[in-house]
Image (cartoon, rainbow, N blue to C red; front, side):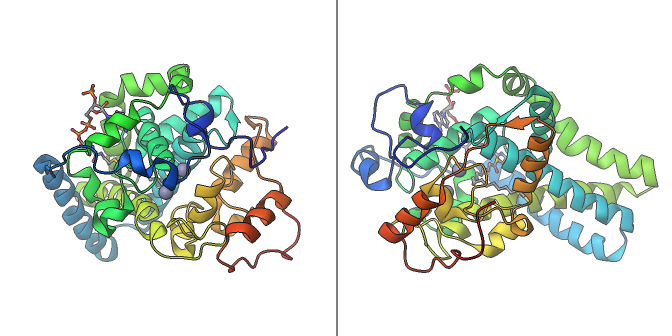
Length: 341
Ligand code: ST9
Ligand code: ZN
Ligand code: ZN
């Protein structure tokens, strides 16, 4: 079938994941009353994370300097490729496949995506997906782990350096992750994360340039490893901060997530965030399959071609159009670009 309609439920959060029987179409207003300030909350900073992320960002700045002054060209290209590969582990893997079930993938592709995902170290898939499903279901309330109503800094990185709001954990425990528990590859990554992550995110990316093309240890560590990791993190975080603040809202003007071109380009096609929050199950996370600003879609389409990805879910144009006319902000200009591909 490959296609879902607006009234069938969309969001992973509501089809697969509800232990309780709350209604599906999950917009902010429905959940707001039960997710704001019903519990006392005191901000508690996790200083360990402040120190680690602080070191990472200073080291990444030094990495920028080394990249322009002493790193080999091979190292710079390799750093870029690792960012793209690790990025796909987040976009095609954790996000479109595991969090939203926008498509299905055979095991070899799931292994590839799990390894790519580990390269980006954004916590294991299981934890990432749980936070992300809570983010969609309780978007911009206290139960949203990176609630953008708490400001740019909080939604970008602040949420990773303080204890979670109790509502996140309370509402999060009502989200079922049964589909992930049944996925051996996801559970393997979870079980061995403390070995896999240091190896794939830090050790191998540093050893390869040193042993394969004689790069210095310092260039390998600061450029290929720490600069690449910090860059990928910040680009991902931009979806939560920039794309929840700036851009057009052609699909639903009542929510903050927006269509942000710069984020789309850097985040491998994940900046079409107004569309994504309205139609979260679309495997393209965008209305049109424009490969230039959506490399992730090209990646999934390639695997669909060889049969490793299948059941790609999209939204029929007339459903999108109706929604645009009903709730859009009037900036939708894509009709007439040709048929959806
Ligand atoms: C990182 C993640 O960077 C980034 C995610 C970004 C998402 C973006 C999405 C945008 C769309 C996709 C676009 C992709 C674009 C990609 C482009 C690529 C080029 N529900 O966590 P604890 C439980 S990670 C239910 O310790 P604290 C939990 O199980 C970076 N339960 O909370 C535990 O239970 P138990 C690296 C939940 O103490 C208990 O609560 N990693 C939920 O408040 C306590 O859990 C880091 O920096 C939930 N949602 O600490 C580490 N959550 O005790 C960051 C938790 O029974 N994390 N529970 O086991 C931490 O250090 C901590 O989590 C903390 C909170 C300090 C933030
Ligand atoms: Zn969002
Ligand atoms: Zn999403």
